[in-house]
Length: 349
Image (cartoon, rainbow, N blue to C red; front, side, top):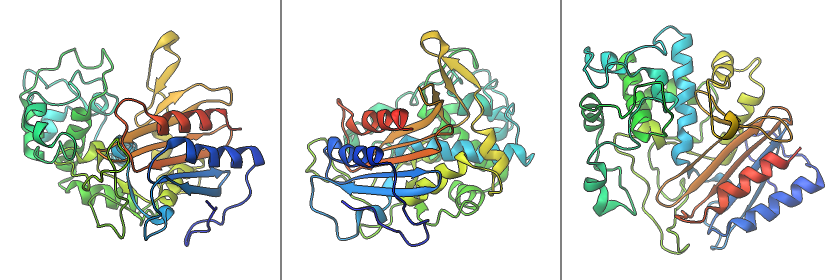
C-alpha cells in the first residue's frame, strides 16, 4: 500500500503518524477484495489501498466505484443549485411539477419532503420487491424504469402526513430526480453532469457503467463471487453515481471550503441542518447529509451500497478532514467499511 500522486490532484502530504497508521489499519480491517481509503487534511491528500483479492490491472485508486445511496449527496446539491437559481422551490409540489395535477394522495409532497425523507413514502414502491425478486442479489432496480417510478408516486398515498415523520426512502429521492428533470426539461444524466459534475471538475465521475478498465468489479458477501455492474433503472437520483476516489475528495473538499469555488452558495445550502431526530434529538439532517456530533465537532456523512460495492463519504469542518472509503464487497449483516470509516473520521483530529 502506498500513497500515490494522482494526475490532476494535489500532491499528497504527510498526515500525522497516527492518522497514517489508522488509514492503513482501516484498509485491512474491511476485509474486502479491493479497499480504498482516501483522506484529505486541509486539502492535503493521502490514499491507502489494499484488499484480499489480487490487484486489478488498473490501480485501485484510479478505478470508479459504485457509491450507491451516497449518490443522494449529489442529488441534494443539484436541488440546492436549482433552488438558488430560481428554477424550482423547495415548497413546490412534486406531483404538480411531474403531471400538472395535485392528486389526493401525493399532492402535498414537496421537493424538500423528498430530499429530507419526510414525504411519508415507503422506502420502495408497492410491488417493487415482487418484480425485483429474480434479480435481488444482482440488479433488483434494473426492471423498474423511470415512468413506472413516476406512476407509482402519483398513485401512492403517503403513510404519514408529509413533513411529520422521517423515514429513509429511495423511492422519494428517485421521485425527486424525475421532478427536477421534468422541471428543467433535461434528462437526469445531462442535468446532474452539467449542473454539478462539470462545475466541480469531476471528470472521473459518471452515472453509467463503463467497463472493467474504468470501473471496479463488485463482489458478493463471500468476497469471491463477482457481481455485474449495477443498473439502477428509474432510481438514478437515489444511487447511480460511480466515482474515482480523488473525485470524491474533490467533492468533499468543496463542502469543507466552498469560498471561491463553483457552486459555493449551493455547497453552503446543503450543509445547513433542517431537522433533528434520534435520542435527545442529537442527530441532525441537512438536505444532503447526516450530521452527527463528535468530540471534534459535527461530522457530515453518507454511506451507500450496491449489490457488490460499498462507500462512505464524510467530512468534519472543525478538523478540516474529509474521508472517502470504498470497497468491492457487499455485507448484508456485518458492515465493516461504514463502521470503520465512521469511527476513523469521528475520532481523527
